[in-house]
Amino acid sequence: MRKKKQPSNNVKPRLRGPVIFLSIAALLTIVLLILRAIAFNNSHVADFYAAEIFTPLATAFTRLTSLVPFSLTEFFVVLGVPVLLLLLVFGLVRLLKNNLYRGIRFLRICSIVATVVLILFSLFLAFHGINYARSPLADTMKLEIKERSLDELESAMRTLGQAAASVREQLPQDSSGTIITGTIGDLQQAAHLGWEIAGERWPALASTVRSRPKGVLLSKYWSYTNIVGMYLPLLVEANINIDQPAFMIPASTAHELAHSRGFAREDDTDFAGLLSCFVHPDPVWQYSGLISAWKDLSRRLAAEDYERWSRAYTDTVTAAIAHDLESESIYWKAYETPVARVSTQINDSYLKANRETEGVKSYGGVVDLLLAWLETDDAEQLLSSILP
Image (cartoon, rainbow, N blue to C red; front, top):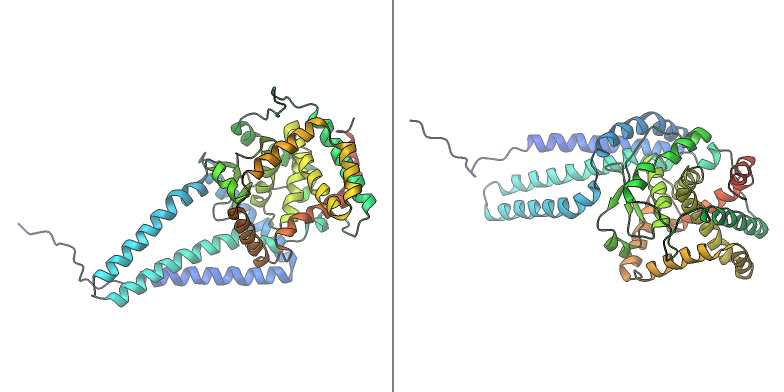
């Protein structure tokens, strides 16, 4: 009987396969980087890419990822990353213990690691990075961005405050005055209803991408970073902090879904998400969007004229809204840690690396879009259906 041939550690490792895959990954990355550079010089290229390449790819991709009910991002962070690190350590230990063909085996490990990194970077570029170069939403929606007076800012704050107060009166609440928003599953099921209406009302917001928002199970610990949501381009997945005050979960969800639908810059993403909340058939979503927009305007007015802000606040904030804002403030004060500051600095650097020169301050850009939109007939018609 012929003995089975035992595997030998003395066999010379092959580099051809890893090098071929590395070359393909590198070529794809270079092509996408060139396309991104062209797109930043010509926004029409980015607009074409978003409509004709990103959207079909993301639509098909999210049909698969949305079948999984839990956050794949959380799964890979909690389990995938440690496993990859263990495999890397295991490979390095084997490399050091065996002197034979050490140089070739080292190059093989480096090629595999570099290939994985380049593929992940290519996915980022394909599903998010190029979208930073899209035409501003203000252009596609024909909104005039300009310097606004304090009168306009105060008027906008009062208008949205009154609209939020009107919707807040309709919402059911428990004995402590906390809004009853339903289960996380209910919120997930309703997530795209507002987007369907928004896409019909504003063609610039239309998209076939239907990413399923995923609640992060470790949200309580995630709150230490002060992050309320995260879009992972590698999976076209919207991840939501479900431990934050429930009345803000819809607005956070809408923001991350805007990213998954092709909006990259934070001001456009915020604005698109808010509009989808404003027209949502569920008052909980309407209120979440309206109070979020009100807070954006409120912060701007408070920074520019505190006394004027104080008067507007007193005149528009009802006891129910004050309760919501206080509960939110108490919640986040418990998570004011150095971790949150580091997280903000990382996010600031990330945004600047993607040509959002204002960094985390770019989130405030939604105020300019709101002010421009509020002077349109479209806004007047929408808000008139909300205000008493």
